[in-house]
Length: 246
Image (cartoon, rainbow, N blue to C red; front, side, top):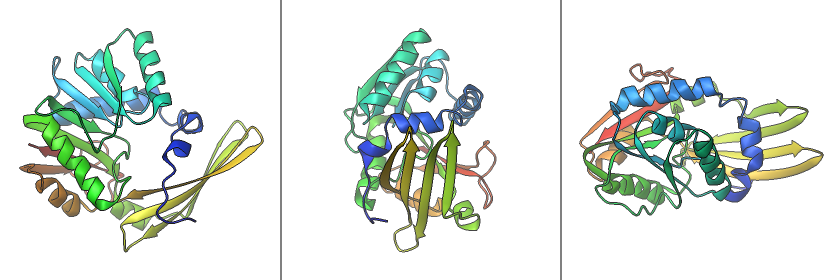
């Protein structure tokens, strides 16, 4: 497995949408959005940024609830699908292709959402920059919500290989956790329609206290941790959801 490689364009493509579609059901999206609204006390008319919005499943649902939503992502394919789904649902979302390390806003949003392990894709300096950019883009009293995997759960239930099958096609993930970097390094093998390709990527993981300290550095004054359904964060929580207030 090649260390320190992240094949962004190869990872976030049509195959990604194909294999994750059965997992990201409308019912799951509804539960996710309900939780987001509850943790952030979202109300109609609030300005919300979905940071690394992907194909818009969260952003479009938030727009249905009356929020003024902007979605930013680096992948044009995902944004095209997000716009198509927004049009089908008759909602308005401003979708922008961009880099989460360089946001074009200051003091603009009531809330920023970073959902489904979309943080930790860069080196530590650039990961910190993502948090600083989010801080700058928020209004005073604004909130940043980050949803990532729970490192304690990863270590406790570590599986070096995951296999996902759909219609006779396979996505095989082989990963290792590097304690010196706090990253999982992954080689993904896609076998689809008789074609085989390999993708390398990594994700930086955090304890709650580490991410809390990172968030305090740019100026967030309060950081709270929750589990996957909004319960207080615990060792065995399936996810770690962090809400930071500016």
